Amino acid sequence: MTLKNKAIQTALNGNWEEAIILNKSLIVENPQDIDALNRLALAYTIIGKSKEAKSTYQKVLNLDPLNAIAVRNLKRLKEANGQLSSPSTVRTINNKFLEEPGKTKVVELINIAQPKITENLRIGQSLTLSIKRLKIFVSEEKQYIGVLPDDIARRLIKFIKAGCTYEAYVKSAGTHKVSVFLKEIKKTSRYKDQPSFTTMTESHLEFDKHNKFKLKAQLNDEKEDDQEESYSEEE
Image 1 (cartoon, helix red, strand yellow):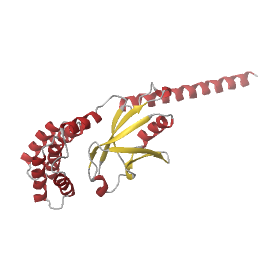
Image 2: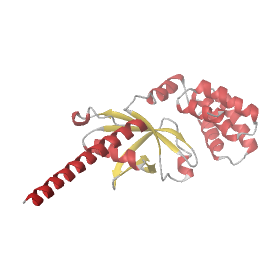
Image 3: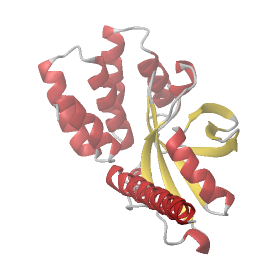
């Protein structure tokens, strides 16, 4: 995994102190790395170091005066007098992203909204899931954000229609990519033994099991056909 990918992953995991260290290393390698600077400023904001966040966003604007992320977040910091985060906020965000096998999943949305909308999303922001035309649409206060991939949607629609409930939060967001954290809240007794989300291996096992069942049924049908043919020949 590259240093950049590690820096992104630590932020997704809510490890902000480590994110600061990694993004600083990227900036040492390339002082004009705007993405790393923006990630560093966000990490500073989350842990409550507003002074460092402001100065880092200002470095971005010195390199790119029209950078939308830096302009927007620096404005928020100034309007809030730097009080955009606190230790309790950090704990709340990290707790939202606690992963449980079968009960949570990070998913990248498809057909996402325009950059001016996605760039305003905040990590940990609550989202709404709604079923429309056999798809699951993701929105924020009635504002369209994107759609869940079809394979995930098909599975969740089955559970939701049976009474299961789920929550969704912004895991990461940028100009051309939005990832959400899906979390199972309630599972009905009908599907209590079925995980809401499967790994790739589990999905393949389910697929293989389904195909083996179909193959067995097909072989039984062929066997019955052969028996019928033999009876006809004897007659």
